[in-house]
Image 1: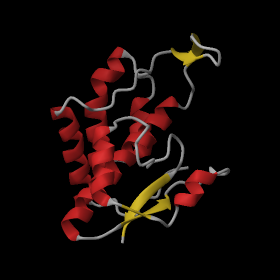
Image 2 (image 1 turned 180 degrees about the vertical axis):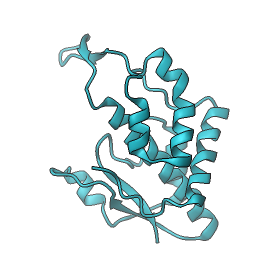
Image 3 (image 1 turned 135 degrees about the horizontal axis):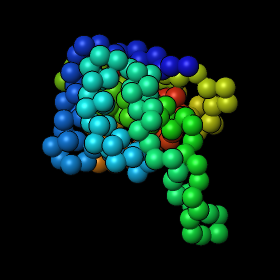
Length: 174
């Protein structure tokens, strides 16, 4: 099931591209360790292409086959073990990163227009996390969110938005 990005317009896509280019210029674009060498080299172009002409689903399709067959997983008592790559890894990366650049673009638009950003569920979840449910309907500081997302590539941010992989939360302009 796909995301419903309420404010995904041509303008939003332009800002998303600018944000990817910002990361590329600052050498801060998130490249998952789970991507293969080939996947890492192709990822920036695939991301930009799908931001301009697709969505998180087309990005996920483009990422299929671009991951290592295994990854190192932390053991509960310390150390690591080799584990098979999850079969939905392409989807998780595509959804998370497309959403992050979408949110960053909306932050830029909100700063220019004086609008606010409200958190909403952009993807249905059969069993939503309690922490995610609590966030829905709340407003978030736009400038702080943009800085947080730029400073913390990947999944963990100080403000907790988006709140981890598969949360399904995003923001809308109001």
